[in-house]
Amino acid sequence: MAPVLSSSPETLVTRGWSDYALLDSGDGRKLERYGRYTVVRPEPQCFWKAHDENAFERANAMFDPQQEEEDSGRWRFDAHGPIDAFPLQWRDVRFMGRFTPFRHLAFFPEQAANWEWLDARVRTLQQPKILNLFGYTGVASLACSAAGAHVTHVDASKKSVAYARENAELSGLADRPIRWIVEDARKFVAREVRRGSKYDGIILDPPKYGRGANGEVWRLFEDMPGLLKDCAALLSDDASFLLLNAYAARISGLSLAHMMAEATHDRGGRIDWGELALSEDGKNARAIGLSFFARWSNDGGRAR
Image (cartoon, rainbow, N blue to C red; front, side, top):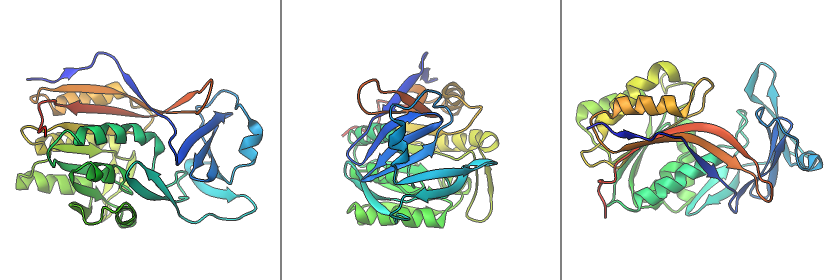
């Protein structure tokens, strides 16, 4: 039976928590708080005016993109100088914020809306097996682990997986059942399909472009359909979810939803789709759409 495709999009909005807030935005920038630090990053879609332009000038750090490549550049810090890695927390998950040369701080705060959904979903299941592909520094993996899942975390970057393992130590989750895999996601999934492995939930958050552990080239538009089809083959008979998130121009939640529908054409359940957004704090808060998602789920999964 084909899954039911939602007829309208959903916007999953992340609002600030104790260690993160979108304080202000406008004039192509956003002002954020990470722990005790304030940070300015470029955001071209913020066409409006900032509420408090002076607050941007008082930030502890500001990212200057390279002209030809907006996702890479360098950080400028205030008079106190460069900031080392620093601890942050989301619910039971502790992790390190890091100023990377790719504009972000070693995690993506708008994903907190997905973490909330995953946390609630996993807690309804009996020790589910969860696969997290392109897992980066592991916040989603650790959110699932803290909720009771057996997790397999896969990323092609040895450094990212090392950071994820550090975050597991910080979170007091190092002794939980988590497998850490440094490998190209496509190769890992293809081998798992051949082995007949099964998972109760799968998370994918692929980049637009990347390289695998052995130099394999990943291109979202060319490689995602085949990978998603293989992921659907890894779902157990009573699997709970398959969650796909993507950051790329020329993509939409609806296009991801149709790709998801094709991959899960015989599994029943439902497909929700839409956008992830970050919302400012306070009165007259504005929100910034930052990525798109499609999510297959089946409420007949392995409930506790």
